[in-house]
Image 1 (spheres, helix red, strand yellow):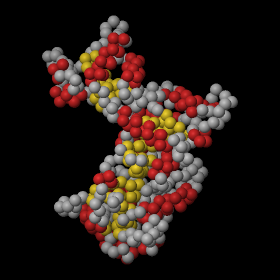
Image 2 (tube, helix red, strand yellow):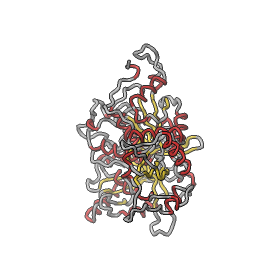
Image 3 (cartoon, one colour):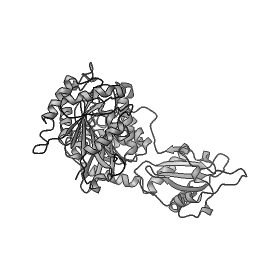
Image 4 (tube, rainbow, N blue to C red):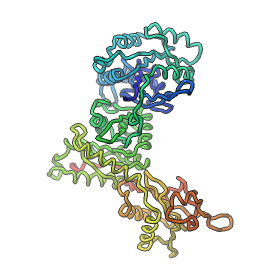
Length: 535
């Protein structure tokens, strides 16, 4: 059986997202006092502990929804592009109805400090009459509803919380997400309310692939999520910036499971219209850090811009394997360019390689998310990149390769001194990280490091993912002797060599020693014309 689903509904600004974050013990949903921040269904799997720790934990899927009835702040109904946000109303309400229609329990959140408002009464009537999600529950039992009095920040608010019983859903639960007042009581009672379900192992296992989907606004990220999930899981709209949260959507793709992370579309920071966009940027960066692979989506009908360059930098900094996905190729492919001939995939790839040089190593794929063209091929490629990012090479193999390179073209300085490499090992994955302990790090100039990186890509089995190279000078003790490796460290990173053969302490290597990555950015700001408008 699937995990029990608990949906949280209510009008805007009653503390739904704060409650989700409290229960999940992490920042899952964006919290802001502006109405209409949450638009999609944001879900997270959490464990509810037994009230006395005398029984099993219960796993549930907790779902946050948009505030019902108000979808834009006063005076902000028209966005910066002149679009009327009222156009999102039906889609947001449909997402709320889907959450209720598929839930095993509904938590109806009401702000005790504001009391029962006309909007609360309207929502309560719809829940009593089972009008929300009716189509999804046809023939099924009515979904149970429990009122939650949020913002019960202390004893003086308890009496106001009990007034919520007048809505006819029984005795309310109370909690404060800011002060944690009634937190333990709330979680204990929720444990009792959640159905006892035997969860199959497949329902709790981690996904085979965590896929972060990033790109500019309107690049087609949400359309791809819905295409993969086979349902309208996230809102798709021509209104730029519709997605705010990082929305996790788990689904099966053949015999493999995938968690796709829909992220907010990025634009220039100077154009950010409020703090919500900064929160969305933070969620995007965190999504890259927890993903196995990123799909960097490029709109083939739009020019590359500084935002594309900024996103590419973020992907590289995160060390996440990446596939560059050219979306909307069903529209752009074959159009007549300035050269008077149809634009081909080879033409467009040449254009991208020229202007996104930092991602020159990454594979590219052409796709139409709307039509579903080549979606399966893109996912297969993502799995390949995830495998490359996890690859390790033996220390002996790596040292032999570097030895050959040093013999062929070793660095030297103006005095004619030759560089020496005492030891090299792969000290990390995702991204593959190679640490070299040398006699003089200054002799390994950026140009020579780039030479090494290019050879690594040609010779080692992770040529299409980010690679990091660390250069470390050997460390000596107070007597002028080279320190020996710690045996545990040596065994972990150098199984082909005995600890006695190692001359330096690899445990001294830290993030601060990172002097080079394979990012090769242009000095100028990227503002290139599309290939089919370029000479």
